[in-house]
Image 1 (cartoon, rainbow, N blue to C red):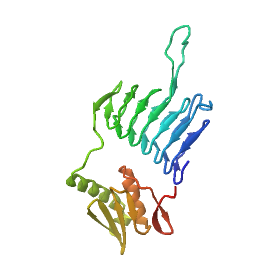
Image 2 (image 1 turned 60 degrees about the vertical axis):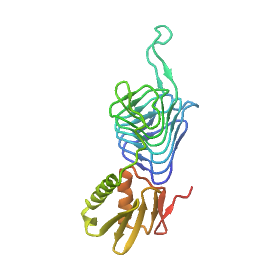
Image 3 (image 1 turned 45 degrees about the vertical axis):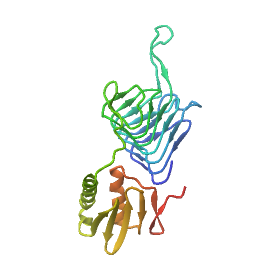
Image 4 (image 1 turned 90 degrees about the horizontal axis):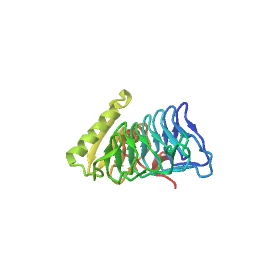
Length: 246
């Protein structure tokens, strides 16, 4: 598991091979493992910023591959096998197949069946049953899942939409009373500047870079940006924001 990952109470991770990138977050009761997780073909390989919500589960029996920024939301379940009653004498259904999920995928309170492949930049509606592949860029949802809109992502925001998002992030940061009178925000050409008592930290929201000193406020701003899906491969080093050492 990579640096700066957080595991809350009741998290359980087990299995033959589990590899997780940096800045993962596991909420209460999140579980990686399940039936046949110690088989030699069982594995989980996940990129950076894996999020697992409360009581979510990833079954690794025949392998799960996840890209960067995959959100496995509250109660979401990902399964790589399913069988219970007699498949030989009754002909009951059996499924054993890996699951592959790309980058930038959000699965809130969803169920993913074995053998599913989900592309990049996908949003799935809450409480969906995903029993088929979902192509990149889709908005999908339903029981069973259907493609609701193709080429949903990525989309280009207008300048007014960008300003609305920046204003939201500013209000989220200033909602902490200890920061409200200490910080000033300016925004220009996709760069969010945060000024605090003479210190200036610049967050380039398109290039995803940070320039400036590490302060308590800049740590909070980086975290609020993360909460809005804007993530930076930067870390505090010698009191200055530096790119991750790979």
